[in-house]
Image (cartoon, rainbow, N blue to C red):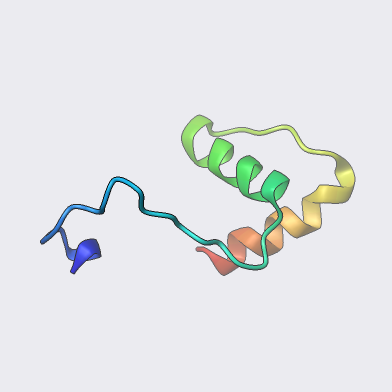
Length: 55
C-alpha cells in the first residue's frame, strides 16, 4: 500500500538495501540524480552489478 500511494510512509521509515556497499549506493544515487558520478576504477564493476540488480 505504501508504494501504491495510498498511505504516506512513516517519518521514521528505514529503507534497507542489501548486498550493496554504502559507497556504491551513494555513487548509484548520485548518478541517477546528476547524470554522472566519480568512483575509483576498482568500484566500477560493483557499481555496474548493483545497477543491473536495481534496473
